[in-house]
Length: 394
Image (cartoon, rainbow, N blue to C red; front, side, top):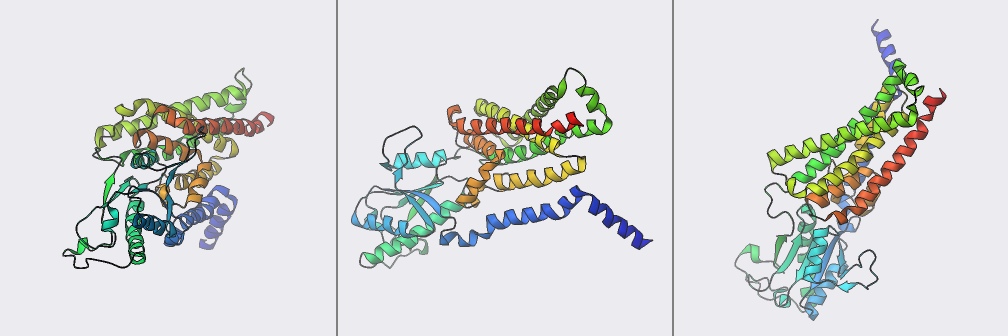
């Protein structure tokens, strides 16, 4: 009897495609994603994932220029010394200033900026506790970049000082002062917030779960097919277009409510500044909800059974959220993987929420994210409508 039960269980698994996806494909997919993201972190210093840093040389002396050159030669850094022209501008790139470098960090163009103030050449290689300090401006949402730049700055300072004729003042009294170049670190975002990272968590979790909810809501089409009610609905004047529209609007309204509840909870319990950013929140929530709902319709119309829908939802939704930043920050990924993650609409949604709550960007700054989400929405609706033709011809 036991061998018969075991054989029946294997037979059921062989016939159940969704179960096979959950058992074999989902683990492999997640292993591959995590391996790609974290497998190359040990090679970060070898240029696989270099840290971009804006460098402003206010001293403009031979020693400070040698330090900048040493930073540029470091395989762990990508040094930026000029401000790129903004979209639609024909002006040539200008040399970075302290203000423009700080603005780049605030906009999220890069995570850290290094300021070499006047007089820094006297501190270079002195190993003393006095003199001018370098200044590192950082975005605290990426704690890795600032620390890495601080460490590589010391290596570059050693190279620049040795090239300039050796070291002076080796008798420093405090071990913390025995650095080839001292620096101070200042955060340019989130200084006045009790819980600065709550917005990241709220957006990431909310987007991930509305994708699951949208897939489940779209699955009502499969239930209606199994119950035989779909045919009766299609014979009415509503038609398939009206049916998909109704499902999409319901799912979008549910997603809006889910996101709102999540952020209101964050405001009441974790002091998330929702009211101060209400216009941007509304724009991003509506755009994210309509895109997620259309995505759910695609999964539902693509699936034949509830089991297939569950398998697809687990595989695609979890994979997109792993790549898109819901599970861990995208700054941990390589530059190429960060760009690749933009194939998912959820990455654009998270970028928009980060702009609203972390970077405090204006509504105009949300145009790239809004445009991408609306474009995904239109694409998903077209695909869902084409896939739904099988029910009309059945």
